[in-house]
Image (cartoon, rainbow, N blue to C red):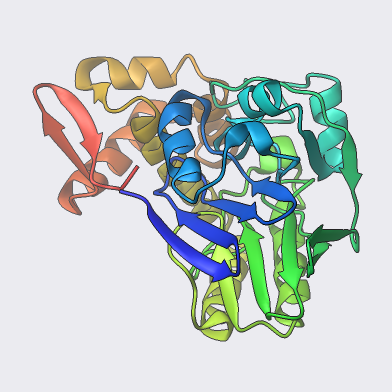
Length: 308
């Protein structure tokens, strides 16, 4: 169940779960969306966006905080019905323009996504105006090379995307993003910590009312992942295993492991961090998930208790 909050006049935050990214809707003279969720759930996303009082046909601009499928799923359809422009950081624009399904993670994680024309290239310091309300683009590589956050100095809020959640970040994919992804994520967090922030609206999860505490907790976590690569590997496997169960709405227990062996990501992470011990690592994590009630089995299917 999503929740809608009014951040500022005509500016709304839609909190989703952990499959679809959170959305932002500005319904002033200018009609702007920030992040549009996962393609499979577009009809549900459309309903929540329109619940703020906006007509998708009136959209002028979509700002995508990066090119991963849980943030751009509605872009193609909304652009089709509205003719809107789409803005994304120049690094991710290059990936989208060239239909690079590896750098955008679509093929790596066996995801559903659709490419779309991008008309605006964003950079650090680019200004995005929502009528009288201004936001600054902050480049936040780590989770995504073209990741951005949006900072509103007047209202002292930050739209952090996946650079910082409440004490954590989006998965750090060193295989696609590069070995420096964790250190870049820490540098991005340091950049964010220097801003005068009262409230953070993250890419996933609830509103963060204590930014300092969330950032400090996130920093400790990043430092731990950098110091201990096995933790980094476990974090990658755990986050994406849960994400797959959300994306697939559960998975037949007897087929789950064999499916994972057909994906690029599972084999690559286990080979990088755990000497290619696929079955052993899978069994270890699923046993932990079952004990912690993060995963349960019903009618022969694995499901997760994590909110989609």
